[in-house]
Length: 623
Image (cartoon, rainbow, N blue to C red; front, side, top):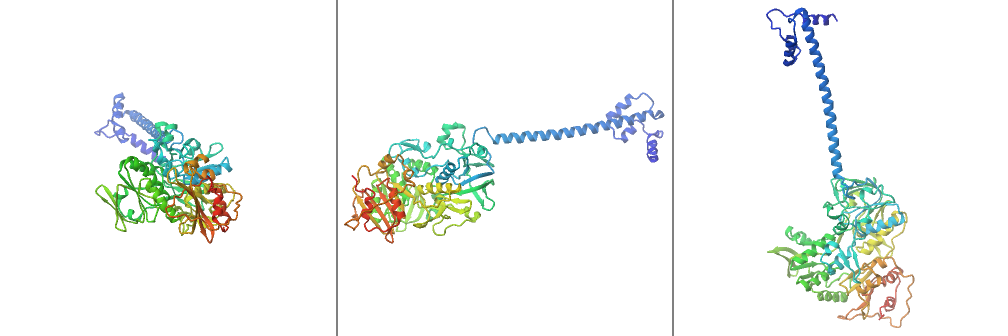
């Protein structure tokens, strides 16, 4: 205290004579010059007289500094509050921009769903409906890489090509052979729940996540539906939404943008990807630009447009898809001057499925549709010469064309197997599952990607619409506790236009011994007539799980099966495929709505002495 008093006394002592006096103390305290000037003008006494002026100046200086400190502190706090407020407003504005009021757009992805279905095709949709049928309050999320809502694929290579509607690529509506019109979509957008509402919507529902952008979800609506429901404001999101990682132990999946979703039960229905030819893959980008691997809606739209612009299209592949597209495009060959070429390594169309005599007849049928069919053709290389593609075959032949469609099979999508630790079948491909389509206790697989065990025919993997419907339905039932085995023999069908078609079931392999029984066809024995009777062009919808209860086969006095002659017009008939004298596969040629009988015959697995009598079960000789 004494030291402080002494220091203060020295500070207040008058300076020696001859030293500048004005503002000396103020300068020591770093008081601004304008305040120093104000103090000098206000002072009336003689500076330094009895120290009164110095004391007054000290008080003023201290007060000024205190006020300045208070103002600085206040302004600083206000600035921090202002900055925080601006940041809050900006963040909220950005969030509002990312969540527009349009229903279903830019919504947040649920972090957890009870039922997660990976894949947006027929199997996934069938599973979703099955889950909801058994559990009406279920909440189901479909994550689809396809930008469209779930739809049926068969019309893409069949009926849509025979439509007279110039806007068919937009409407995706078609007339069945019986004249009735329908859409390829299983359900309109109103059937689905917006993704962001799935966790809270009353009574649950099915949501489809098929577009991803900056961590938000966009349920993409097909253009035709968009025009009806949301108008021109709808913007289709070009991003793909794909599950890229699966943590089986943690019951979570990760999407391609890093979003994670946990689940209670999961279905893998990832389908497959069209195969390409090695010769085309080696050909380079110029060839790839003129190639279509036909699978999705966008492929149909693209090929339909191309068929109007080019002079020549070559289809590589003689199976179901290749032959259907050849007939469909052949129709345009007659009306628009389009050259359609089909080439494949087999001896005839459907050579891997049909016996040789029927394959040859089918090839002639395709040729009559306006297609230049080249059997026994193996592609060696593909190159660009001028404005055309040149396909070199191994036998030295060359084919010039403008565009190529490769229809050479499907590769099951099993990329998730590595991260999930799931087994892939080395012979047939696809995820190996048990009789209940389970890969793990809470993971099921259905559709093209499932490799299942058939108790009658052994382990199989099937790539047909009916199998996708039935396996998806069964997986959905088992995901809700049904615990049912997969016993169903799926069927498939193919139409070569409205007048020739066939349905098949079981193992239909041309390398097996076959017996064919044929009869003269009538006007009723066509795909067109079949749809008139069933009411649907998707014929498996009317006979998916039906099975004849009993099959009675009478004894015949003529045990020798009827063998068709080369060149005979095969109006309608039944082809039996045998293994160890037991029927393991059946093709119904221009015979429709008899699949339950065929299913029963294969399920019974019995030897039959006279297949002529078995053929009578299908009413083959009806007028």
